[in-house]
Image 1 (cartoon, rainbow, N blue to C red):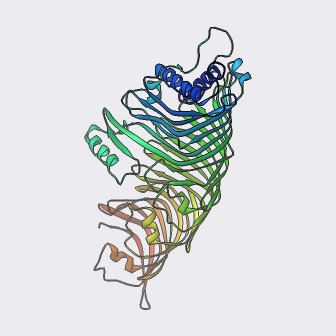
Image 2: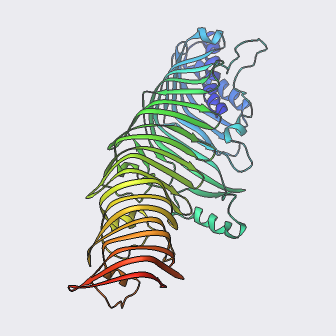
Image 3: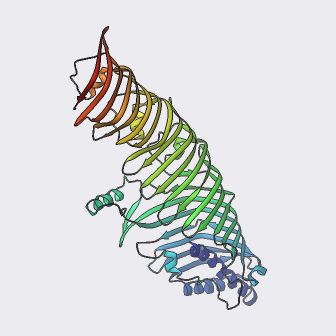
Amino acid sequence: MRRFLKIVAGLLVTVVVLAFIAVFAITNSNWGREQLRTRAVAALNGAAHGIVKIGAIDGNLLRGLTLRDVSITDSAGAPFVTASEIRTGYAIRPFISRKIELSDVVFVNPVVVLDRRQGEFWNYERIFPTDSLSPKSDTAGVQFGDWVVLHDVRMINGHLTVRVPWSPPDSVSARVRDSVITAALDSSSRTKVIAVAGGYQLVQEFREIFGKLPLARVAHPDHKTRLFVADSLRLIALAFAPPAAVVRQMRGEFEVDSDSVWFTAPDLQLPASQLSVSGRYTLDNGDMALKVMAKPVSLNDVRFLYPALPGDGTANFDLALKWVGPKQQYLFRGLDLKMGTATARGELGLTVADTLELHQTDVTFAGISTSLIEQLVPAIDVPRRGILSGRAKIDGALTSMQVDGDVTFNDTQSGANRVLAVGEIGTADGVLRARNLRVTLRPVQVDLIRISVKDFPLGGTISGTATLNGATDTRLTATRFDLTHLESGERSRFTGTGAIRL
């Protein structure tokens, strides 16, 4: 990344240095500017293992210049950089000290492709294998390329594509490797993976980039990182398959170290959201860590994170997000969520990988419909329609969750059901599992049993307590149960121990 940024600056510097020569040697005229273009293209192509083109050079060469129809490709013609126009101003004095200080730099319609395949270098490293655009000197001290600072930079309608190597996780066995690759290549996958010579690539796009940067510190002898200060930045980000992230305004600082971008954006505006964001993005593999303060955020604006979110709704929260490979982790604190008639408040931890896992979750909720649950978690098929409310503490995967909850389910078919539960519960492949699960019914409609036993002969309600262990496909045992059945005014009480298998 450091070399890529210096290449962009070096392109300008090469032309600027030759412009000084042109001013004094061949005059500041149209003929002189054409001579400058010819010499600049020859010098750049001499340094590149690729093809550099400049359509025209305009401007008063004493103060600045404009490059038109600029393109850089590799030797096979694969694109690296194109721009319809690049403008810059400059002064002579910094160049005498080998300092590159450019001002009022404008990139018009720049298109950049950063491409790296498995076992190969980045495309810009192959095109410019060394910092060959910087003039060499045997003099000690600052050399050309050591000091590159741009002031008042503007980008107009930029487009960035990042292509990095992709392969199934090392944890995947050889037996399922092909199916993982097929799933990644499928158009329904959230990650955009393509087949290329020698393997596969993950592709990410950032479109319609418009920005104003008071400072772009590309290189400086006193700093190991590059610094970019943005007053205004807007773009459409497609780090994954649509929906895209639409950034209407961003103000902040971006620091580039090796192949990572560190950023702090205290003012980030999406179409209907106001956020403060900080974190790190790894260009090499797309991994990301974020801290977000949303006050508030529209759920429709953040569906790029989780497309199953409903389009209507708002939320206030503090979020810690971490993406590593296929694993996505979300931790919400201070959550205040509204989705139509549904509300939720508290803390929520969610891990999305091969399975769904809840952790550090402690929420109070109301108006949660079963259809909303199925929308948020497509893997769940709720057998009854209705509305849930209550509170829940949950920690663990869906197959084995530690729970402490008090939930009321208003079933549209049979009526209200209230269950208090403390212990371990899980579900997978239609099987319910429990371990030391202490359950209190206050009460529950017997009709719910018909979800599993269609011809169950009893109706009414059941109230009482029991401790459950086992699984419904083998033996689910209820110990120390004390249950009361009420139907049509008739009351029955059951105590003891029992077991069922469904």
